[in-house]
Length: 86
Image: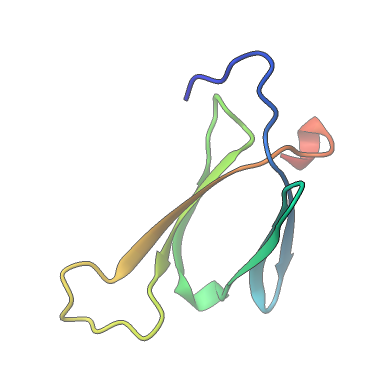
């Protein structure tokens, strides 16, 4: 991922609770919320070089296990309020 020096990452709120993980992203015009139940998250990772990149593999809702691919891959670029929060 090559970002230009003037490129600003999207601000997101990442909320982790017993219900799962919620990611709320806000742009100048739109706001969106994604909710991922804990039991559907198969794998999650934070990039070591680009620490503000979070990726996870999530089981598709109502998936048929006979499907070729029962997983969705989500990658989020976010700006943390502070380095320790990324």
